[in-house]
Length: 292
Image 1 (spheres, rainbow, N blue to C red):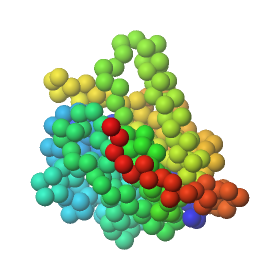
Image 2: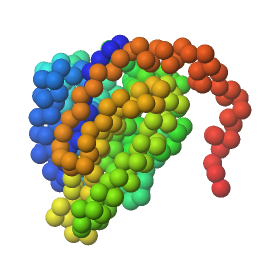
Image 3: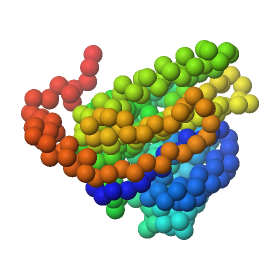
């Protein structure tokens, strides 16, 4: 890994507003470039929207050949920046919850969400592969929302050499509480959940963990659906300590730009008894077996 600067974005991504969401991505990417970021990361399904409704897959497209992905590729080339974005992918008439990476030289790769949550099973097919992407400055794995709750996903990336884990979310709270006090409690609950999960992934795997979440209401105007997203931007270091975090209580679209240094990662991974080096995988057979 080399020192580089990452930009994490939280923005609203309403359903049925693909063109609008793409324009939002373009605007934030320009801001990230102005902030001298090398890599800008957007939330889960930020282009097509997430909200527990068939509209999530209404504008699904092939990756990388689809028009939205091509637009993001052109943007990355023009601005000389790497971009990670979320979209509903359509492959042989099958939709996937997909996150892809592009850079100045074109398409890098994609991650399909492996563990679908709640109503996503009605709309998407689950992914099966856990690739690690070699960027000029780091090896990167993508862990999409609920996949962050499955430790084996980030561990597999780490065993494959991932140095940075991108925890991209479109976590929903359902019906939004009516009073400010109740809303604050709801936000505190979800933020505390992430403050448990993501530091553990960082410490266990000796990697940076960078998470971002959609913000705002994504299903406005769609009958029978309420999807509210609380946002949240956090970065944890290879020792599990918090590196940077936004003030999520402000509930606004924003970007967190953070320098990621190679030295702490090297120090953690060369330490005596670093767990990935000394683990005994021959004892882990049960992890590959289904539970009752």
